[in-house]
Length: 510
Image (cartoon, rainbow, N blue to C red; front, side, top):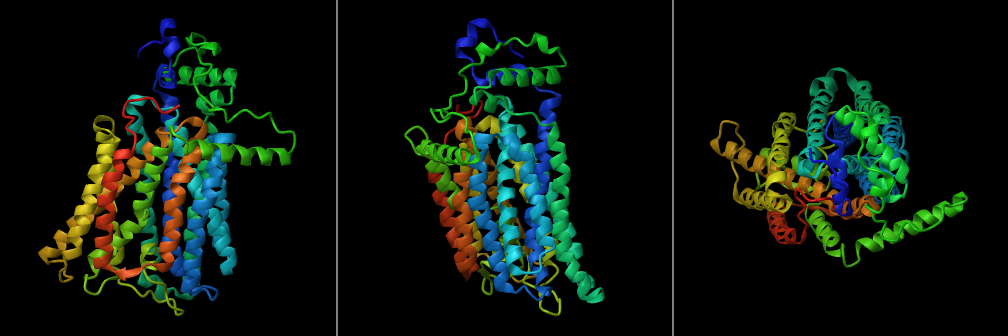
């Protein structure tokens, strides 16, 4: 590890300081905590997909209520996520990390004990807000302590644990939704099943919230807030834990790290004296930060990321559901509605009978590992060939396979050779989509300064979540038209990728 020498202090960057702290126990703990958060995020989002159709056994639920609840969830991710992530630029990510987990825990249990559509809608709005905040806060907090040469590699590792939680929750939902449960355990079990899924989703979050006590504040945030003494103490702590050395041997002083993190003239107000002033300060700071993102230095990056996110507005789970239905329904009879984009099966009827072919679950589970294959691809190449080239490759895979699926139809027999060819197309599509989604997360984190990193994440994720709200209510078209639309969208995204920054093995923007 290269030492920081006095003659190089004038050109010192935060990455040089992070490199000096070394890679050791604390860094691995941070990766572990972020991975635990990712596991809980996957469990929470899939619980919603599986639980709501089962909730139709309750008298207060019907299909329109399910769509309303979905709408509230994605509005929560869009609006609540933006507000909470923007606040994290002011309060720090460490404050948001455990609190967002507690929000998920409380809202999931509120959903589990809901007995009206209104209370369930409120619970899901809060759940969406907490989930989006935790997704962004955990990844940003991790990225801020990663060395530049391996930032992409370690950033993707928690995504594997997201996939593990996702696959385990599919298995759990499968067991709770089987025909044998419906027919032999009766309505009582069905009334319990969907509530139990929400309880499982909430329960793991409270455990991870306790684990976040091991996490220390980000030195970047402390430098932003001009807390130079505390920032230096944090760096000494990382240094002593990672390298198993005495903190007194830390080579840098407070004056050496002064001015490394710029506040872009946003953090200039005096400290608030009361609650009213604090709220005004929060709103003023949020407004200034949003304005900064659309000024000359960042407007191309901000606009480019928003456009790519809009083009990939579906998200991993809806695309996985779409590919599952693609495999099991012929194009000539296949139609996709907004409901189908977020639920594996149609709602149960009032007799608690599942109106679906249970082969959907094994097919859904069969395709799930392709998400991990996309993550594995990123893991090995993101720090070698760069972010933009990987996004172009993923978009190309999606565009080509979407076009192929438009014209590829077959009889639905597992022993039919054409069926396996279609499995390959769906698998490649899911791999490409996973590649793009997870690589975009890296760019969104490293392309903005500490003063605006949370706000940028909130703005970029606002548009796809809001658009998905609209799509869920109005989308109804044949699978063939859906594939053609997706092919065109992903082809356009290849062009937009040109405007994204490339920060492979470079310092994060400050």
